[in-house]
Image (tube, rainbow, N blue to C red; front, side, top):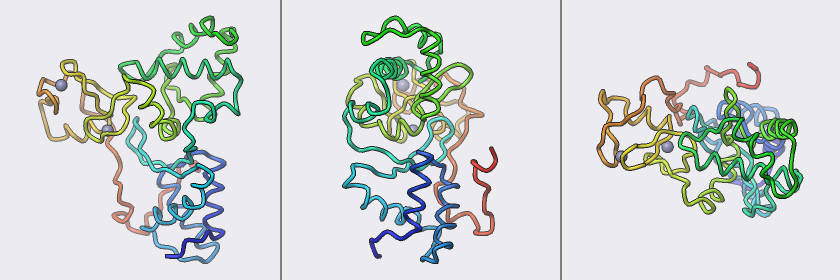
Length: 259
Ligand SMILES: [Zn+2]
Ligand SMILES: [Zn+2]
């Protein structure tokens, strides 16, 4: 297949540049839309190939469109990520030094936590521990909001975790920097949020837990066989990875349109 960028590729890239991350139904929707608009070859199962063409043009810029799952609900997303993995290049251009330090310290707390969430109180308490330049609590609140807006953090009822886009971009960096960072026992990718075995310490993403224990009334740890001490029902299961299983007529409304 030809490896050149058409206007449909360019527009798809623009959507990712302005959003940073989109879910798979939205990616499929704009893939189809732009191909039809520009009358270029379209097949719904060719999305990853389509993205691959864009990626060959992004790689010289150390960027890539990457596909990954949300730890929270297991849904598939596409995100534009920066491949130049140095702490400095990642966020440095956008934030002040003490804001970066706050992010780094927040990330430390999140990665080292059991659940992958830290309370806003713990983050606010970092305000006078910053070495570069101290912040008032009020400022920390504002910076936190900015990190949420920029999709580095996400917030749930006052607790903070790393945003899916952030994990997709920084997973390699996190694995290299944190010895405590755990990989999911099921899918082997980085697990920030999840459940851990109290006996052997392995961790699993919630959607992976749900899928793995689906048919087990009394779940046991897949590693040490101890009784699994957490609730495994009513967790969200990952959506189907196969767009081909959905009939072409059932075009789902994109999340961004429903909000
Ligand atoms: Zn997993
Ligand atoms: Zn175990």
